[in-house]
Structure formats: structure tokens, C-alpha cells
Image (cartoon, rainbow, N blue to C red; front, side, top):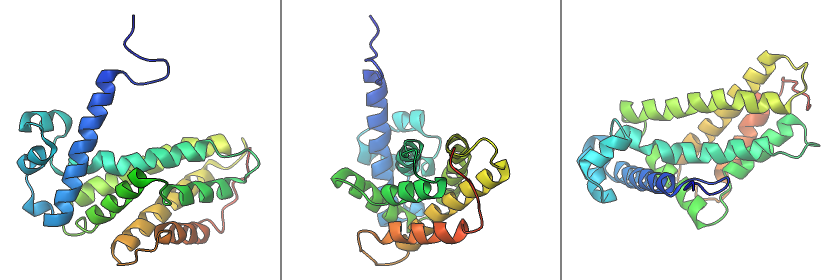
Length: 210
């Protein structure tokens, strides 16, 4: 009998994801507190309660350890966008998904968003963290294209879809970077900034709904 539950991950996959998340959480907290230069892979492994060998089984470098934290919000964002109600125009569906992604529901989502904020404050001073941050956003932009293509009408110019993906990705990145650089603790601050950026960046685009 297969160990995989219907439509769900195996026990091994769940444990792997939990370990990855714990390492990412500890790495982000340490980077936020000490800066990347002041943290070693050994420090992260120790904080996460794993061996250094286990750490390197999951991640090649200490900076890459934060990737699950950064990518987790992206997955939720793309999932919400793909499930947008059919009556919503593409740009409106995108705006709604952006707002949802940056408006946490529940303690776990709020904690992840604020941990990301702390991490981003360490990014400008470290080339390794900047590389991880920009790589996550490059992957996000690539992943947005097929999702937006599926939402758009078949005769939509592929260039407009690419531009819309770039605009949405930039709006999200700029909003959280701006939020991280301030002391604004207003709950909806990053979401409102992201929507404002998105509207400005997509003002000249025409991507009709399928």
C-alpha cells in the first residue's frame, strides 16, 4: 500500500518540509538580529536543532536557507490568483491576489510576513542575501506568466502578459522592501503600497479575461 495519502504529501515529505521551514525560520531570525556576516551555517544548524551535515543536505549556503520563507508567500499568491473568480478582469484578479498575499490571516501568516520584513532589513548589506532575494523574484515572475496566460483571453498579446507579470512581481517586491525600510506597523501597509504600485505599473496594459 502506498504511504501517500490521496492528494497529500507523504510523511517523509511533510517532515522534510517541516525541517526546511525550521531551518529557514532560524536563519531569518539570526540574519535579522546579527546580519548575514555575523551568522554561520553552524549557528543556523544549532538554532534549528539539526546537524551541520543535515543543514547542507537541504541548502548549499547559509543564505539559501531563507528561500523556503520567501517562496512560501509566493506559492500562496499564485494559488489565489489561479483560483480567481471568472467574472473578475485579469488586473482586478491580480490586485485581489496581491492584497490577499500581503494581508495575513492568522498568527502563522502574520509571523511569516514580519519575519520576512526583519530579514529584508539585512538584505541590502549582504550580496548573498540579495542574490537569493532577486532569484526568488525572478522565479516568481516566470511562474506568473503561465498563470496569467490561463486567465487571459487566447488572443491576448503574449508581450502584454509578460509585462503584466513583470509589473506584478515588481509591485510586490517594491512594496515589501519599502515596508521593511520603515517603522510603519500599520497592518495593511504593504498591501496598500503593492496595490498602488500595481495600478501605476499596469495602467497602460490591456489583458482581457478569457
